[in-house]
Each structure stands twice: as C-alpha cells, then as structure tokens.
Amino acid sequence: MSKVVALVHTSMDGVMARPAWTTPIRNDEHAKYRHGQLLSSRALLLGRHTYDGLSKAWPTMEDGEIMNSIPKYVASTTLRHAEWNASVIKGDVAEEVAKLKGEPGQDLLVYGSGTLVTYLIRHDLVDELKLFVQPVVVGSGKRLFPDGVDTTTWTLAGIAAFSTGTVVLDYRPAGTAA
Image 1 (cartoon, rainbow, N blue to C red):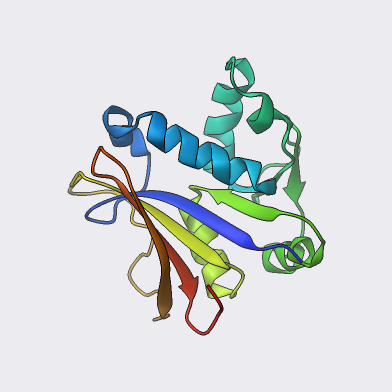
Image 2 (cartoon, rainbow, N blue to C red):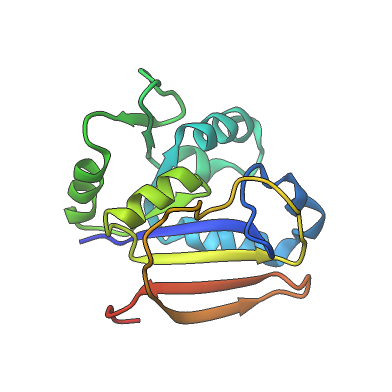
C-alpha cells in the first residue's frame, strides 16, 4: 500500500499560489530535499494548473531525468489528454486516488496543487502533509486552506530546517503512526 505525501510551498501567512516568491530563497538544500522526496515516490499526483506549469518547464531541463520519467496522474475536469508521461484521472478523483494508494510501491507525491491537496484531505487520502514554509509574508493570494474547510487535527512528525530560514513541517493526520 502506498502513502499520499503532499509537499506544498507556503509563505508564513499561508499563501501558496504561484510561488515565484520562493525563487530567491531556494538553494541546494531545498533542491536536495525535494529530490529525495521525488526519489522516494513512484508517481506524482498533480492538479491541472501545476501540471501545466511543470510540463512546460521540466522537459527541457538538463537535470530533469527523474522528474520527466516518473509517471504522473493529473486531476482535471477539463483536460482530455496529457503529455509528459502523464495520464488524466477520469471519473471520481477520490476513488481513483484510493485505488492508486491500494497498489504496492513507493509514495504518491503531490507537488503544490492546492485545490487537489485540499480535496484529498477532505476525503482522508493524505497520509503526510509537508509544509515547506518560506520566510516571507506575501500579503495576499490563494491559501492552501480556504475559508470553510472542516477542522482537522494533525500531529507534527518532523521538522527540517534550512540555512535560508525555510522549514519543512511534516504533519500526519492525528491518530496515525509517525
């Protein structure tokens, strides 16, 4: 059985959309951490907007072998066909992700994709939530958890800190083993 691990970049004030503001803060420590997450995963789960951005950037990158070769599943109600070693999740996303979780192998990694992460949390499908908190206040923008999200309790399972001031807070749903 696989786990769904969501890795989400967020500002200190919870903004996560279009995180171009993270670029000046990123360094080799960040890249090594994200690379390790990718290596421990058998596939990526992506929302449509994240897929669009990544699929345009990564195929031309010199160091993109792993990112380009890993299977990708895209949750979208409008995308009919996907390139870049990707397939579109058809039908009920929660049901299809539950099936993917039931397969043996490494983790299913969600990169960004805030709407998808929130949806998966609502359906109790996220096993780890890794918040990559950047030392910046953005002020406005889409937040990972919009108003109206049900209260859920999480347990801190680990912390990674980087020299840039960025921290990764690794949470698990309360009541699950760390």
